[in-house]
Length: 336
Image 1 (cartoon, rainbow, N blue to C red):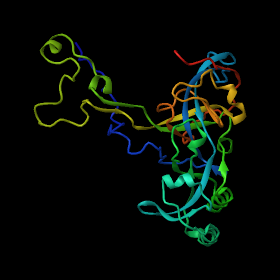
Image 2 (cartoon, rainbow, N blue to C red):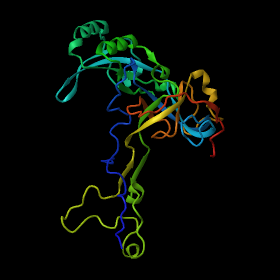
Image 3 (cartoon, one colour):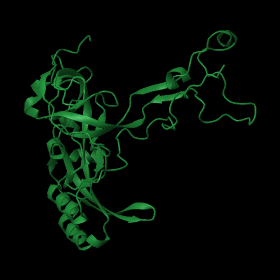
Image 4 (cartoon, helix red, strand yellow):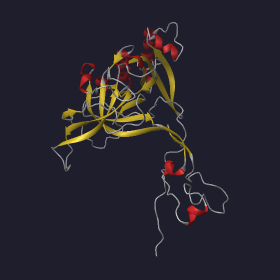
């Protein structure tokens, strides 16, 4: 009789399973895209609903037919480009060369950082253009405007965002053209495009190994002689150490996670919010007041949490055909 084999419970790739250091998501990498423009956009998770759309997936059993699909609504108020950051690359990676801040920044930023009394941006830009040969990367610094959304906060989040382009000069020219100006989600993405979502997941607190890793509940003699909701063995007699891979109780949730290739079904404007707002608003969020993005499927985190949308780093032949929506549910979510 062959021995029973089964895969381990819980992926060791997601380690250490501890609370995220910051709730504001920070992408570790950006895709290489020739088209000049911003590569990401932040938004606030609103909630979920469902739509009826034509399945345009090739070789799908329901190709050409109308299907019901769950979608996530992300409210995306305009963001402000508050700065430009230039990098030099050395043996240890990218190293900040200089920062340029826009003039006349929002007073709400004083809740997050100390604003300089005067930052001569034009002079710094001219100096930076003379050092183009020394620059290896150009990125922009943006800040959100939470007062515009239905989130109970005033402090803006500050994020760094990559830029598309083939040369440093192209990226710098674009960054200078948008410095101090508003950017909308339609400037970064298009309907049908695939994006990656980066966010901090829902926190579940301190949980046992059954819920945290999905280990089997003990049965029979093991259950009667000991506890049921524990692993059967935490390791061998020798070596007399417990491996870090053993499923044990601890923190569950509130981890930074990236989900890849979420299809944008619709980028709506502030004038089209009645197309998605249900009666009584979204649970634990309220009404959408600004531009919004409809994403196919789910997104990490609870409602009101900041989600970073980034152009797909590994699309792998995903088609970017715009979705044909025939119905968006606006039924009340109360009591569902």
